[in-house]
Length: 122
Image 1 (spheres, rainbow, N blue to C red):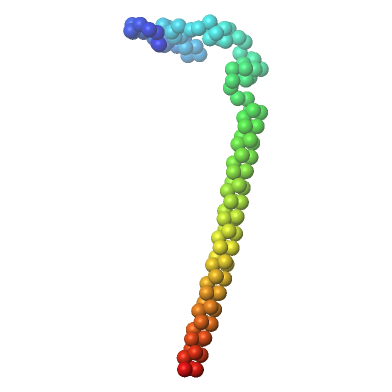
Image 2: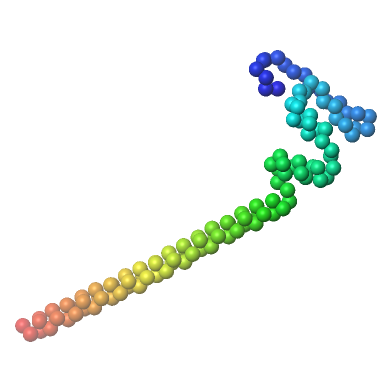
């Protein structure tokens, strides 16, 4: 189980007569694991132990979920604002292009009319 040697370890599992306890043979446990196993298994002891060991309790989980939801909402709002601004920019660009095109058409019509009048004079 992770040692430097290449020996094969044999691990066996057995259950007691009521199948309430599993007996594991051939597994080495560290002192910290043994100490944790000796701790009382009351509900408050377990929740304190969980939060001390880095596991998340319900309040922390709710807080994290709320923070993640707020971040996601802010990201979506930012994306929506970018799309709106981009849409406005495209609309302004379209209006400007139409104005330039209209001016060019009017100049062309004026030039054509001027040429037609010159041709009539000659």
